[in-house]
Image (cartoon, rainbow, N blue to C red; front, side, top):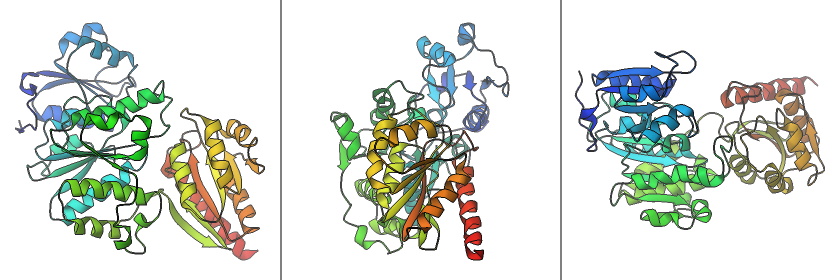
Length: 433
């Protein structure tokens, strides 16, 4: 059995049998960690991918601790049973954090989490201080706990979703960035206040004296939140933007704000600013974040398929100059569609919609905008937007959907790839015409 030095004084040594809920990426990572600790476990999964799909009140006494995957909501019957019992209840991230030996930083927010997490991780490594990016970014912290990265000099920069923040047990953070707050996940939460409260729990996970950095709209939603910890509220550029290379992605919105948030935490941790600047200059945005695809016929095409909520789509629209021919749609996650329509209508030249929400979004937009089209799928919407933009160039065609992708695609990456391939097909046809 592998021996771990824990980062907090949890009574983990008293656990003998652990229940894990969910057999996806998080659940399987938690399973590997629990097995490495020499503990007994049972993996519960409703789809039949685990040891059993049967959990009831009679099951509670069989276990000393419970670990939930992010997909189990606050109202899920299994989670309700466990949390009402008062027994130790963890997310995969929280359970793993107990066994992480190094520094633990958190990054949360409605948008920008992945970019900030990657930037900070790169900056630590650039400064010669080993770091890993973990959590919602893709690799569970449990897997890093089990590897060579787990040592006292290492830093884990954890992207933390609201789903993971709902169960903060075990998390002790050495610093936190809460980038922004806007409507999202209202198919899971009953209100914005409940969504906010899930993230706000992370402020209570800060070690004494650990810095926290808040985006200005976090404070705008709840002015009292900064009183939970000693927080820096970032509402303007860091003052280092001009020191970035001309082609750094952090020179344009919304990445300018993400960079300023990272600078504030970096300074609070007393790290060499040169390492952060070097990392920002060398940074490559992950696929399907706001980035140019191609330019032809006087039209520039931008792919922002990762924009799965209103706030992200608005930020993309605000960040582009010129006439914007906007492509939006997908499947909804709740939220005020009318308010979203009113916000973007004055900023776009024309609107091209597809997907599950197209009819309802079109109804909201047509009361405030004169050019709104509905198309059967994304390919048709891209073709229509391109024809319109070519007739009025110079202009921009922007895919920044504002909604989830699962009505027509397996995920935002598949949606983005379809956009890119369609743009290049249209380019070939344009050359031959």
